[in-house]
Image (cartoon, rainbow, N blue to C red):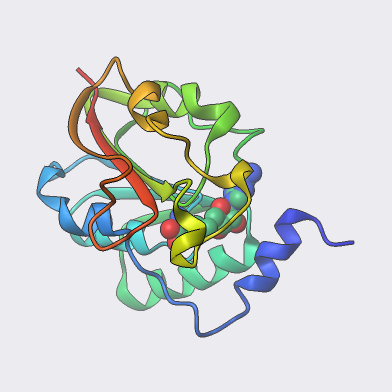
Length: 187
Ligand SMILES: C[S@@+](CC[C@H](N)C(=O)[O-])C[C@H]1O[C@@H](n2cnc3c(N)ncnc32)[C@H](O)[C@@H]1O
């Protein structure tokens, strides 16, 4: 039987999959600082990382899929982007406290490491979070509630931060029915 990591590796062998930034980051990139350290957490093919690097940030892109990271590395080499990749099991090695000015999480439920992700944000740091919610299956997304955001979950999770944008049911992320999102600033 394949491990979760091996399943993702297998999935990333599909050459039709291309890196794409999430719609929240695409649409609200004006919140990004001009410089600083950014993390694309559970980056997959690194669509967010690529956008962040092109906007002038120095980027770390972490994922446990060696296959995804190999593909991202090939992209970085081609475009000479300031992105440092790492193959890492995030639940065992979450980001360190006070280490990033920007963190982007898309389509990954941080669950047990939510607090570490929050603490990894520097003062004045900005965090973008977008993922599928309980409406997801009606819009062709995943069905397993284990991987879906509950109502108000993001809002609750980040309540001590300043909320810049928030999309909760029945409102949805820009262009993405069945998805919730939040952009917060660490004060
Ligand atoms: C749905 S994909 C999202 C990828 C990317 N953020 C995007 O928006 O395209 C989920 C990613 O999380 C990674 N992942 C899942 N569990 C992980 C873990 N425990 N540690 C590190 N990466 C993990 C998978 O390899 C996969 O690339």
